[in-house]
Length: 213
Ligand code: AP5
Ligand code: MG
Image: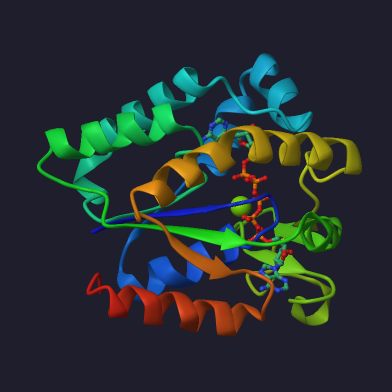
């Protein structure tokens, strides 16, 4: 089974993806993390990501397909967070999966206003060690640190200027993909402005109703 989670920056993709992948036994594939890992050794990528821009669409597709090909054995059932973001990336992923006798089973889109997303991003903290995502207001860590003992940090692209740029890309590019999928009745829309638990249960209910899980 392969599920794609789409949504604006700060819409809760990572939060829901982590819970859903645990529940459904899916490999959690985050292109944000893949990009940040690649950027550690690549100044150009670092500058792109930190400024809030997207990595060129074809280049990102290449990184993803390469990663999927190399790690195929542990990635039979995948939950994709942050990929695809362009129609071209969607088509390339579908084609790759089909070539392996596989398919995209569901695309979920989390809807949220820019105002709420900006509010959430400004108080997001991430564990440097295990990657767990917290929010100082809505999803606070206990005793000021991660449960694994790791230090909590802010992402470099979580500054007001980069967030604005990330939103521009979402509205200009990812929205086109969502519209394209909506025309084929191929996207499950979810109101992302509710509590984490309510959204999670709603997604599971919708997947069940469609016979996907
Ligand atoms: P990526 O890491 O994917 O960033 P993003 O899309 O901007 O999304 P975020 O991770 O910021 O938000 P999220 O939706 O995961 O929210 P979260 O769950 O953390 O990508 C980073 C960069 O990598 C890109 O800018 C680009 O450069 C590159 N890249 C990646 N994919 C690419 C692609 N396909 N093509 C080209 N380039 C690519 O939640 C946010 C906060 O809110 C947290 O604090 C959380 O605790 C809190 N929260 C979550 N849900 C709720 C809720 N329901 N109520 C209250 N608070 C909540
Ligand atoms: Mg994320």
